[in-house]
Length: 111
Image (cartoon, rainbow, N blue to C red; front, side, top):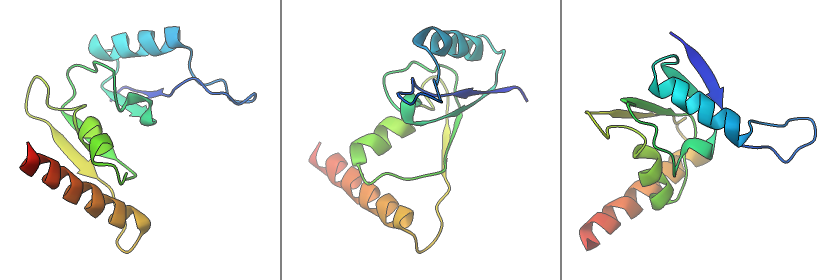
C-alpha cells in the first residue's frame, strides 16, 4: 500500500494546502502507479481525470444529487468500480444520503 494525501490550495495562512503543480505531480504519480491510494478532500470530486480508480470511499455525504453523481463518477471509468459510503445511523449524513438518492432517482426518471 502506497498512499498520498490530495487537497486543494488553502486560503489559510498556516495551511498552504497543495499548489496546482503539486496536485498535478501527485495525480501523475497515482496514474503511474507510484501511489495506489489517494486520501482526498472534495477537491477530487469533479473536473479531474483520475484514471484507473476502482474504489471510492466517502466518509461524509452530500444532499446534492449532482455532487453525489460527480463523486461516484470518480470510479469505474475504465473497469467496474465500487463506491462505499460511511454513514452513521440517525445522523444528518444519513438524511443527506437519502435526499441525494431520491433526487438522483428522480433525475434518472426524467431523462
